[in-house]
Image (cartoon, rainbow, N blue to C red; front, top):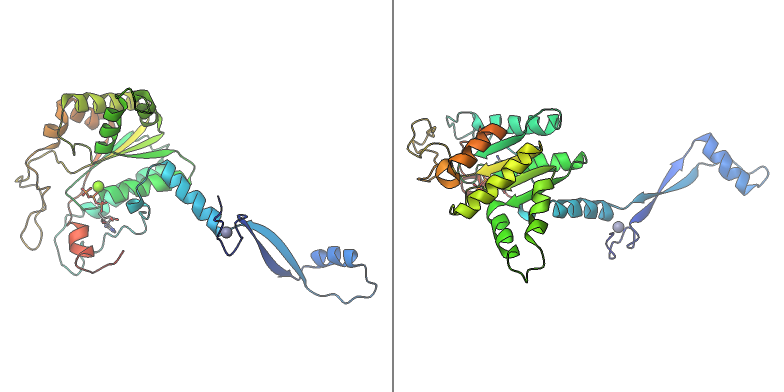
Length: 289
Ligand SMILES: Nc1ncnc2c1ncn2[C@@H]1O[C@H](COP(=O)(O)OP(=O)(O)OP(=O)(O)O)[C@@H](O)[C@H]1O
Ligand SMILES: [Mg+2]
Ligand SMILES: [Zn+2]
């Protein structure tokens, strides 16, 4: 819907653009209508109705809402995902290149979909390294190309499912589950974030199995790694501190062997080790957004 207050289109969703057209054909058509003998030939103003920006913006934000992409992530794309702030940047840090590598992998996944044959990506890494940003960037690019995608926060999804068990709840369990199972591309953000109950593990296991069997693509992000935080393979920074998930638990502790093993099968694993962008860049005032 166009904005009723829009000064450009007055709420119609269309605005007229004029162009002075020196093209002779166009002039002749208008002259014939004019039918004034001997009238001098002047450039003619032509008018087109074009969709107003307000309805374009509206359409884009409605499709983002349908995909349930949270407002906070609406701006995320590949262009505004920076990789040079850390690697070889002014900090002079010895990053392992995982940030730019992750961007390349996720970007290639989006570019090659659906012929790439990838059934999923699992983005792992500590807080604030840009996992959700990258996953949303892929979703948005795919949506622009007409694919249908949905974003679910892991904890929210479990809560919605739990609420649906209440007989007075307006949406049934299947009503909640159906779009999750059927989404062409599903993003489950922050998997493992809630304490792992048997019910939660069975539920996520069921969702992943179903989607995998139907060959549907699932992207996931998680704060949990496959190794404990004191693993020497986790790269140190130039300042000597380790980039850790600050977690004692590994992903298996949060999801159980069965689900982790299913994820190995269906997802390409992408580990990101970088400083927390929220704390190091935004909070430090190096970039505003
Ligand atoms: N490399 C980057 N370039 C530009 N913006 C970034 C980058 N990394 C993160 N951000 C921004 O910083 C914020 C935090 O990033 P994001 O939420 O994607 O991190 P995350 O790894 O998903 O963290 P969490 O584990 O807490 O969910 C977002 O607003 C995101 O747009
Ligand atoms: Mg995240
Ligand atoms: Zn308008």
